[in-house]
Image: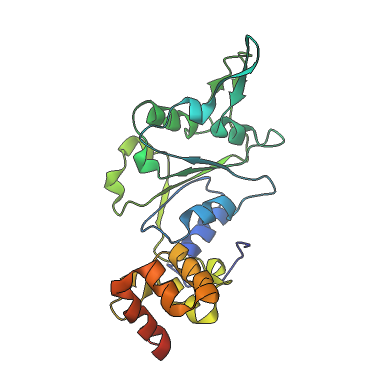
Length: 243
């Protein structure tokens, strides 16, 4: 599923991201409700030929999972394996690539300190390889997009927010991310709701429902995805076009 350019109205989150990317801003935070395609956008929007590196934050995330760690490669032999942040600093040709840091609000302790170092300004950021003692700096094309499901930016540490001059609240899926859905689901998927009560539904749920109803029918699919309590309202909305 390609992430294609679409003309969006001024003020929309995707128009904001397009303008920021076009201006060459290389530190962006995408936040807001889950299931709107923040990670997909971070991995694909404005990414050049080199594939983006992805890091998913948890409470147990270690610095080694960010920059790298020693790995056994044979009897009594260990080799340093660089982590996603350093790989993104380098990129395939030394110019740097995209680093995507998912659910950054869940990072804490040493991992947060390491993320601050990895996302520092190009003039200040540097890291020393423990195996070769080489000093590594981010390449000129290095960029970072962090994502979070928080609703308020104050829920993130100020030191982290300071690394990202632009924060965009993503409140709707990108048009290209719903293009492969059945036609009757595209509008509600863009709105992020389904049924007369305006129930919040993630993009993943729309895709699961669409696939399941082809396999076992709409009634069974609605029960499996939305639950018995909501299934009837979902089916009613679909049948009368009241989405």
